[in-house]
Image (cartoon, rainbow, N blue to C red; front, side, top):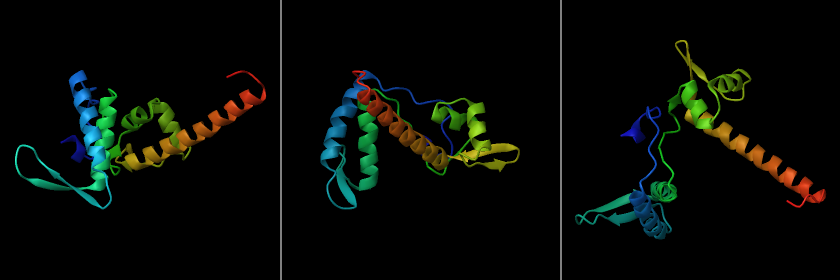
Length: 154
């Protein structure tokens, strides 16, 4: 199962079919209704009488996965402690591998060496991405405010 691997799957996940997206939409709404108080939720499997107790955090993640599938997005799961190659990290950030290496060399993203190869923890890539996205949002808001001050009409 790809969710249990320490690295990204070799090929990206495929987008859901129209039928899968439709199922994901209805099931995400049903599961979202189960997100109540407490640390866990109990679910009954339709094919049997088994009751499964699921951590509420996992159930929230499942709702998010299904919501993304409902919108036609491919979804993959990766543990935060996964070690990524520079190419995998670059793909995750949607940048070139040489650009990622420059970020590592500048100290913007931490890495460690495995033999002669750089490895980056997924958590470090995601932390950089969150920081980059937050900085981009601040810059976009500043540009929007400046456009309004100048009366540019957008």
